[in-house]
Amino acid sequence: MRTQAGGWAGDDLVRVFAALGNPHRVRVVAALVDGRCHVSELARRLRISRPLLQVHLRRLEEVGLVRSRVEVAADARARRYYELTPFSFAVTPESLAEAASQLTDRNEEQS
Image (cartoon, rainbow, N blue to C red; front, top):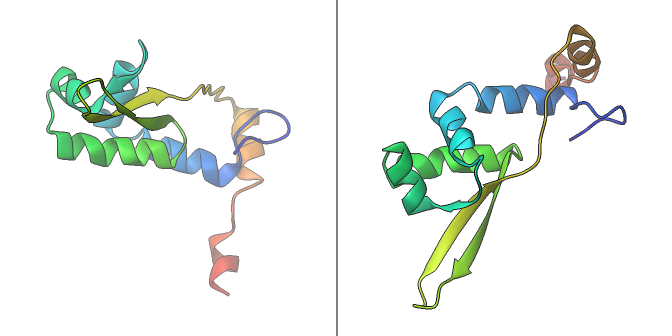
């Protein structure tokens, strides 16, 4: 979720950075820069199994960095395509201070 100033809300920023903390997920994002791709082709490009790729794609989708869509081809086979959602990060001390001011206090949640 974006803030009014265009930055990322604190908890959302932490989730996005956590998702990008995995090298496979960074490679997935890099592979999708040139456009959408279906799972099988993406797995071949990245040289990882489809089940492992799907785990990483789900995580990227959960944090809003990619989106998916099922399409039915002329041969009646359904394929799930993934593409990047537009995003950008300007990581500055000020943007981190803004995000930090919006973090959920985990101690308050437990009360």
